[in-house]
Length: 425
Ligand SMILES: [Zn+2]
Image 1 (cartoon, rainbow, N blue to C red):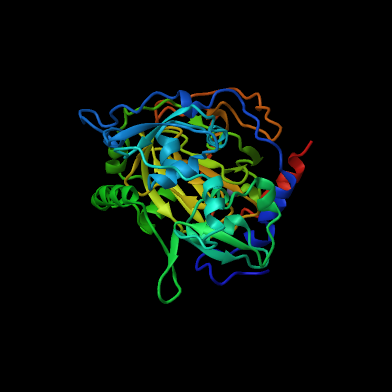
Image 2 (cartoon, rainbow, N blue to C red):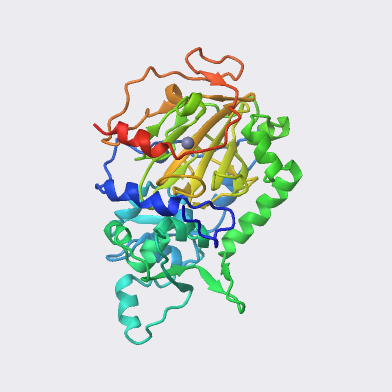
């Protein structure tokens, strides 16, 4: 087993196996009807009586409408305005597919911008590179043996989608990457000692400062919080901050990766220890919140899980999203249903890019299968015909939602590949 020592926490089994899935899953992304994120209602007040929410705070920011011109990518626009691609996606309720097929003439909201700025496109960059071959605003990284684009994303905390856009890579280019090749990693810099530092956008700093205050007050964001949430021990203050017992509880869960597919279910693995659902996806895909709530934990402090986001929902449910390449949210931040939390990856003990999704309530892990909307999605795009159920009142659990105490088992998603094979028709 090869372990890359530069990853402090990551046991990078993923180094060996992350490419297995991408190699076999290169198809154009099919759409399965309207993106629930795009049609979900605008976030209204989560706290009864409160005048504004984070959604309100962010929408109060100045913004301009940018009309997309030919050749411009979302990444070009984000870069010009010192934003992350995810900021623009969330501000416009755009899906991953929308992001990749940006049509000229489309009007998009640019959050935090006061006036238009010039946009530099790939074509502009290549002509300027003839004069100055070395680019600024990032570093060049030489790919190591068996290092994947997800490993680079995790190591440098830069989304795969941004690495691809900055290098003009297609999915095929990413799969064809080999050791020794140089890749431009945008948004990071080396200090004098050669250590890589991540440069945050001013907006990110502002958001983190603001949510950090709330997280501290509520004692959210620590590893202790993470272990409490993992076992479904939810502080009533967290539930209140998430929107309370009567907050917006649709009683269902949004399938967290729009075009992601089911690879492994609840109760799989040795002695049925895997009380979670594994959802696989492709390069640069986003992981979205299954319901509205408040981020309780965002980090990589839990062994085996890689980058993890945990969200507390009104009513006291908790959802968890593990193995991400990059997390976009911070503890204390309120999120809407369908809001982008992270970029799908293969960090921690993981075979191939996927999300390990857990649905936790009252000290037990529950099977989310019947609550997912639009349903459990399979690789060919079909949805499992399941009996849809809703769970609106925490104490009135529908009988077809199975719940069980978390097994005291080391977390291991390495069986994931096996069940993926059995998944293929
Ligand atoms: Zn899993």
